[in-house]
Length: 259
Image 1 (cartoon, rainbow, N blue to C red):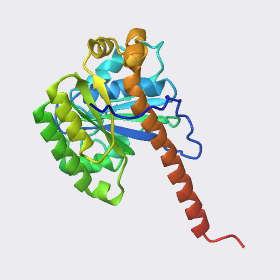
Image 2 (image 1 turned 90 degrees about the vertical axis):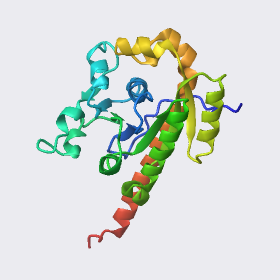
Image 3 (image 1 turned 120 degrees about the vertical axis):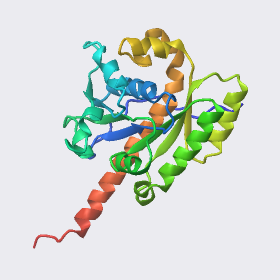
């Protein structure tokens, strides 16, 4: 059975010269229970190793913020934004609830279940990269199909397609349902980046505000699963830099020159 291919060794992705905005990574799937918060908190932990990182929580359950509350101050700092409290029509706009510190270079956004329609479109407008976690079950495979369709048909995505990728979550590879999930993901013609195994390491890490990267035994065993995703984000960040620099060049060329 083919594994998600990516043999590059992870290198810190800190080359963001000229790209003033942070890269905003949204973790989303309309289906609840697919491990969005687990993916978001662990990704934030990895990003914080090399970047000024913020974690924005739109899920009314507030699980990502609960995770941050028990995180040790001795670990790399992650700024928390409880957007589910701020984003109320009579209090604020979504742009306000997305504000982070000026020196932030990575923003991870945890989203609620049931994300669709106008809310999905609005959040995509403030997203650079979309990660879609999917777990091995027939129900989740069907739900992921519908969500990916909704994303691709949304107005913000049609006007400005964002990089998006799928991550298989809570995986036991030697099972028939994983084989079915793998075939489905490879048929999507969008990047299927990696598979994260079903392990109690994630439960243990979550209880203490940690990521897999913060547990020595888990980092050694599960780090290989994360490298393809981290490398893909590194490459995407470089593409954002290049696109931003190219847009600046075109803008300068089009501007009237001083006489």
